[in-house]
Image (cartoon, rainbow, N blue to C red; front, side, top):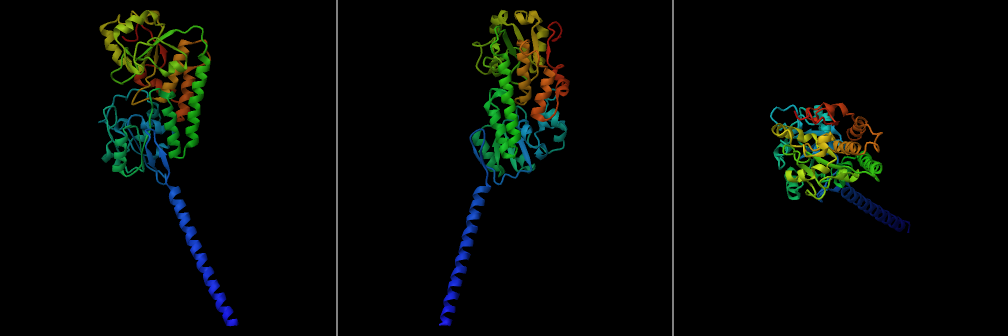
Length: 390
C-alpha cells in the first residue's frame, strides 16, 4: 500500500515538474514575442513612409539633402554625425561654395565639428539625388534625408540596409506645420522629445506674441518684400503674394493679388504699377549681389517706388540658403514687424531678439557671427538709398 502511494506521489511530482517546465517555456516564449514585437520602433516620416527603426540605438548619423543637417542640428547630438555633404565641409577646396559668405547659423555654430568627416555626397542645389556609395563609406546607423520622393527614399533605404527617414520644411518657413512635425519626429527618433517640444513651443509662443503685438493696427502701410526664393536667381522682382510672416504680423502685402501664391517673380511692369503705393520696401540680403549690377546699369530703376524715394527701405538677412534658416526666418519676421509698426514693437531690440532666437534653436548667441558674414552686409539696417548699391 505504502509502495503504491509512493508510486502515485512520484507520478504526481513528475507531472507537476513537467507542467511547470512547460509553463516556464511558454512564459519564456511569450516574453520573447513581446520583446521582439516591442523592440522595433516604427515611425511615420514627413512624406508618409512607415520606417522601422529596429532597436533605435543610433550612434552614427548621416544627413543628406537641402536643410537636413540644419534640421537635425536643432534637436540631435552633433557628435553623432558620421559624414557630411561637401557643401557643409569648409575644409574641402573642391566643393559647392555659393553659401560660403552667407549666414547659415547651423554652420556658424558647428562648422569646426564637421571638418575632417568623410563625404556623404556633394550636396548643394545641383545635387538632385542621394549618393549611396558615399553614404555607405560613412557607415551610418540611420540617414536623415530631405529628398522627398517616396520611391527614391524607399529605394535608398533598400540599398543601404538602414533606416532612411525623411524630414520636410514646407512653404511657410518657420511657421509651417511641417517644421514642427519634423522636429517632433527627430525628437522621437533620437530620444530628444523634451528638446523638440521645447523648440516647437517656443516657435508657437513667438508666433502668438508677434501676432498679438501687431493686431488691430489702425494704420497698415503697404509693404513690398523682394529678393526671396532661389539662391543665385533672386532679385528685386522675386516676391511672394502669400508671405506667412506678413500674415502672422498683420502686414499689408503690396503684391497681394499680383503674384503667384508662393515665391515667384513679378513683371517689372507690375512693380511699376504699384510703385506709388509702396510705403515700405524690404530687400532680402540674398538678392543684393544680383541687384548691384542691375543698379549700376540703371541707377534710376527704383525711382518709381515711393518707399525708395522716401528712404523707407530696409535690409533683412538671407533666410533661404541651402533651404530655410529657420531662426533667421523668425528674426526676419520680428524685424519686418518692427519696421512696419515701430511703436507697437518699440521694446523689441533686434540684436537681443537674434541672441534669444539663436540660443533657442542652437544653444549659442550667434548675433555677431551673423552680422560678420560678408553677404550680411553689416546686418539688419535701414538702407541708405544713395550709396548702398554703389
